[in-house]
Amino acid sequence: MTNEEYHTLIQPYADANEVLLARLNVLKHNLYSESSGQPIHNIQNRIKKKESMEEKLRKKEKDPTVMNAKDYLQDIAGVRVICYFVEDIYNLADALKRQADLIVIRECDYISSPKPNGYRSYHIIVGIPVYCLDGMEYFPVEVQFRTMSMDFWASMEHRILYKMEREDREKIAAELKEYAEHLVQIEGRFGQYNDGNSVLKRTEEKENIRS
Ligand code: 0O2
Image (cartoon, rainbow, N blue to C red; front, side):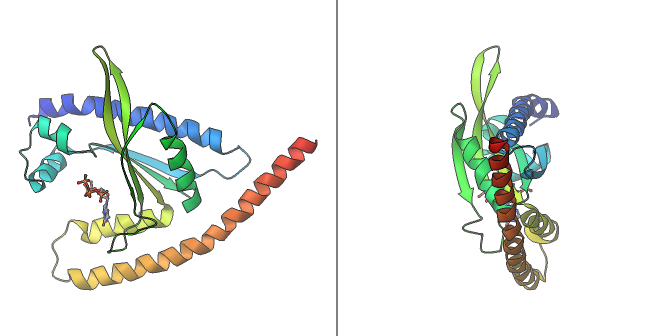
């Protein structure tokens, strides 16, 4: 794939990312009132680099061409949504799935079923309608919903182990798995404060109705 081909390829994926970011912002306002705690800590988005696309295609035993990138890579566009609580992840993902003009291409709940190494995250690949002069085409965007603790673990694991060859791999993998289990417990304890927040929100709403 030449540099020029790469830049032409990624443009509609970048547009799809922008559409999804706008949808997430609207959802955030619609699902949560100003007075209640906000669900999203931060959102990151990226377009996969040319080298990274070519490497992934080679791993899939495909030639690194534009056509193969379109056919075999569903994470050219990626959005990562970092939430405060696990409950927020399911609220936002469910609301996104209800949007009739988006298509759900694939869904992977690594929160209810974590990967054996301890990785947790909720992945959903959505097809975003992108309109151009010739009509409309769906472009996939991989959305990864995570809490802050899931993101902390995954980012460290990505840096230390994920794509690395290391002699001490097994030892580190066992240690990281143990840290993942600790983080699940800590996250569960923080979760109790989210209930308090909902009660507060409901109480506020009742008071607003009365006044
Ligand atoms: P990078 O460098 O983050 O882009 P796919 O080939 O993507 O269609 P796959 O690999 O089965 O299918 O999809 P999966 O399991 O949903 O993983 C997609 C992405 O999730 C990965 O992209 C990572 O970003 C993240 N991920 C999945 N498993 C792990 C894990 O064990 N540790 C960490 N840190 N991240 C993980 P890439 O392209 O593999 O990597």
